[in-house]
Image (cartoon, rainbow, N blue to C red; front, top):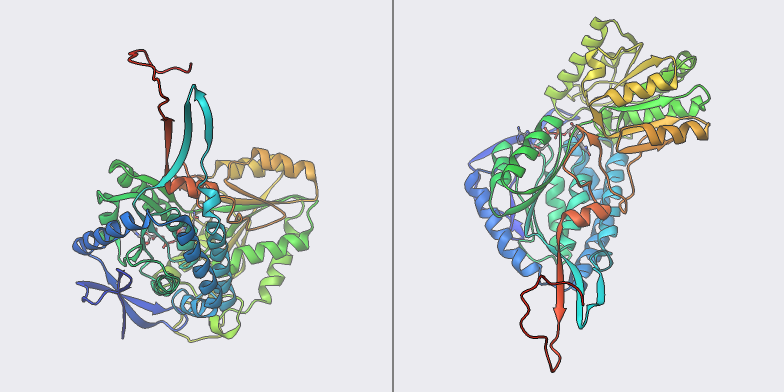
Length: 496
Ligand code: NAD
């Protein structure tokens, strides 16, 4: 049985861990290996090695860092298939989807390749007689990245390349459910020429996370996961004086107006609702249909679901299994709760006949109609292939529903009315908005992040926010003495 151990000082750690957890192949239900779970002593050791590496790396030239980033970009692109296979084997998402997440992560590496430009400061000549001012942005030191199971490559890549390019050392704590993608990437960083210790992969659970959140040498924490854990991370790490961005859960709505292209909207609802078995923070989980379109839209969505093939992600299926047996059972529980609460179960994913091992964690695409805002299938983040249709009478009712939701990650409007779309863009209280685009994940040179309970902290991921998050500003005021200087003056410095 393989052991996925920590990556410290540029190599897989040789010492046996005190605790381990099982890793499963969700498409077969079989235990494929064990992952190390770091204790406090291992956290301290990893951070100490990272801190030593950080003090060297921050002095490396921008050209050196850029060369490493370009080399890593090339290696990531040429190892996409290997990485996708590792992701599918532990997460379960289909291979094409796994390759897609690597591609989206690659785009952040490409963004970070431009770090010399991104770190440029300002310079003002002659702010006072003989005095100049310039600003620089400097790295923080050791930063922690704590990532969720649902994007084992892309979410680490939202942060790690930008943090490293900015001159920090990173301790990455991936999800213990699918830890191997981080190991592949660590190996590629080493092959790209990254000095040992600049990237550490520390595996673990709450003990490792809490160790990082309270460690005095960890300067900043980028977290992505569920809202309760994001809140815990934000509160604990800020109380320990750290800079924190904690991205949380989601409940994303898609508002369909009566003038929308219903085939486009139905395609989008199916793609965004069931891609990656609904285990995406930008998945659409609630379709808000403005009457009279609901009957026609539900029929179109149901027909498309009938054409989907659920099964092993290595067999060319459309949708894979859920990540663990417990998670599958939890989502199945929500389907029962929806029926009990009186929602119309249009397609029952519990009846799916998967193309895969009977012991895989299967649940087929599930569609509910006539869902009300007080039902648990609407209020809770289910994080599975369960799509709810909520019928509303007007745009205003739909908008009020979305704005009343505690989450604010992503949303979309489907319409052919530019004025309505523009109004939505202005009025909706959500961080990422799509107009006839169901999963509006921003490109790497913009920043990714939700509002309300979907993000704690001020900075979004990557783009300008990412560079800002992983650096701190310094302003330098300079005067080179002329042959005669001004003499003693105890007045407050003002320009002359
Ligand atoms: P999770 O919150 O269970 O775990 C996330 C990370 O926190 C993991 O590394 C895990 O080991 C660690 N962790 C778990 N419980 C902890 C605890 N009690 N104390 C400290 N650390 C803990 O999330 P998950 O199930 O891995 O991922 C799915 C969730 O992530 C969903 O809620 C999804 O919406 C969210 N997510 C959000 C975004 C976003 O951009 N907002 C992106 C991806 C996923």
